[in-house]
Length: 467
Image 1 (cartoon, rainbow, N blue to C red):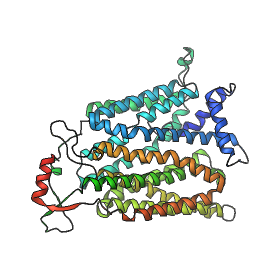
Image 2 (cartoon, one colour; image 1 turned 90 degrees about the vertical axis):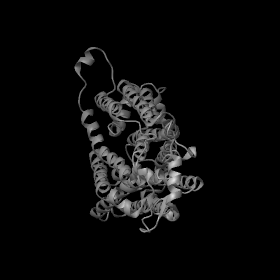
Image 3 (tube, helix red, strand yellow; image 1 turned 120 degrees about the horizontal axis):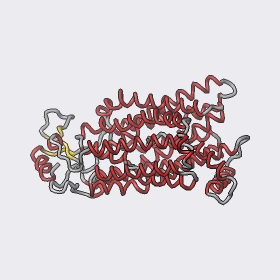
Image 4 (tube, rainbow, N blue to C red; image 1 turned 180 degrees about the horizontal axis):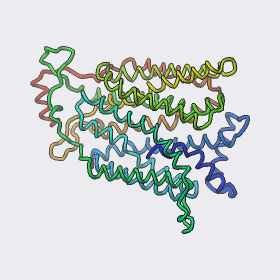
């Protein structure tokens, strides 16, 4: 449901442009004039400037969505701690349905933007799903469970956009026209989105239990120190101050990584259009292949390997792969005229590296962050005990918020650099920035740090905290 409208943004904007261009006071003409002025400060395309403006506006709409997520994610996380995961998740689903309903009736650009704003303020599925999986898994199971969220994302980014493109070509029922009902030009994909959201909401309502404060028998047992099999000592979480500092560092890594990665992600269609004159279907095939390979890597490699090498090391491997990909992309323009086949091969190699990055970094950092959260809860109320910033919903909400801020800023900075300095310089600088991020993460332990304590003391602590 989330990915169905993504490939339709440029065409939706074009449809609104035709409808509203006669009145320059409408929101869309004024917005496009601002976008054209902003683009003109840095770049003047040799042809079709309107097409560039439409694509850039689509990116700005995505940045607005991410900015709203940056603002609302911490609040959604804290509300899930106060009122329960299930209740807050169902409320956000109602907001998503309302967003799709506004979309299906949006015959003006202003009403369509209202739909996107409602959706941005309501999108809480990912962080609450992450909190729920953290509730129902032990620390040793956490990485494998959270990898499933990444697998779901990869699969849906492969199948959602084609579904949206297919239903975009289906006509509206003629009975609606005869009744004088005016709907969005892409009301059929909007209706499919509503149907999926309603089905999902019904499924959650009937099948999802409340998981906040769920007691796990396995979680009550001390975690044996695997480094010393014969040791009678067990592992416990470090002090709150250490975990808060580590969470702050993880949020900073998450922000910088997604700022660079999302910028590359957004400018990649510019690169293929500029150098190879690729169509939307060719760009879609490239992005789809990245998603398919990412899902295969997460299911076949990441879920198994992370428990052995640790979340921190896996995230660093993904960042190193991203640096290689960006370096390869910086070489692509140099071979376009002299050896086109070489430039295509470089692009394909970069896409393969990006698949590994997509499969590893965000899921590993999210798992690492979840393992810093308090596991204890009040047996009477089900609410977390301990430091409020270490409650799972709150901590993971802040973590996701930092990444969404990166997604809001990254595409804008990347576009400015792409148009001012060119693709080779942009991707080379991005590769250097990714290496700098990799170096700054050197102090991050491969696995979440645990402290040794004797079994009796740990059992007492676990029992006292109701973990």
